Image (cartoon, rainbow, N blue to C red; front, side):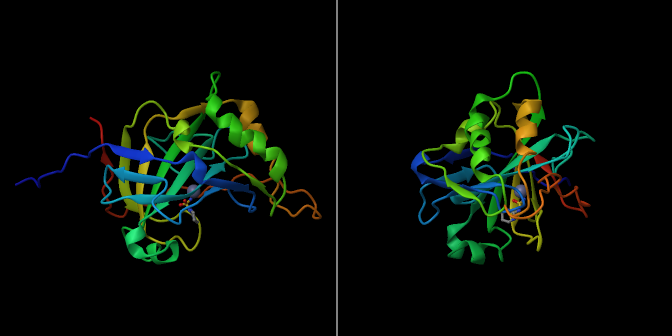
Length: 225
Ligand SMILES: NS(=O)(=O)N=C1NCCCN1
Ligand SMILES: [Zn+2]
C-alpha cells in the first residue's frame, strides 16, 4: 500500500517594513537584521505549523556568475542564493530554536544573472557602499523583504541544517523554484565586499557558499507537479 502523501499548501509571509533595522558585513554573508522580539514579521503555511518570526536575511555568492548558490537543481548552479531566516517562537528564543528539529524555517531564493534585473534588489546593493569591510553596519529601515519574492510561490521543501558551522539540524527549507534576476554588475557589486577589517589587506568576500550535502534518505517534496 503506498503511503498517503499530504499535498503541500501555500506558504505566506506577512512582514512589517518597520521591523527592518540594520545591514551588516560580518565577513561572511552580509545580512539584513529585523526586529524579532514579537510576531511582527512572520512566515506561515506550507510545511510549517504556526508562525515563524523573520530574524535576518543574507546572501551567498560565488567568485564568478557561474556558481554561488548552496542548492543545485538538476546540476544547475546559480550565481547566488538569498536566505530569509525565521525561527519558531514556541521554543522561547532563537538559541532555543536552534536545538529543535522544527526550530527554524529558511526561505531560499535563487539569484540568476540576466538582462532584466529585479529592481527590488537595488536597495540592498546600494547599501554595499556603506558596509565594505568586516564589522561595518549601517541602518537599514523601512524595508519589506517580500518585494524580493519571485512571482511564483512554487517551492521544494525538506528537513536540513544550517549551511554554516555548526550546521544545526533544525531547518525546514522552503526553496523557491523561480529564481529572481540580477545583473552581472550587481553581482560584481556583491563581490566588492571585503571579508577583512578596514585596517587589514583587502580580501574579497566571495565563495561564501557550502556545496550540497548527501540527502541520506531524506525526502524532498515539491509543492508543484
Ligand atoms: N545559510 S544558513 O543555513 O541560513 N545559515 C545560517 N547560519 C547562522 C544563522 C543564519 N543562517
Ligand atoms: Zn544562508
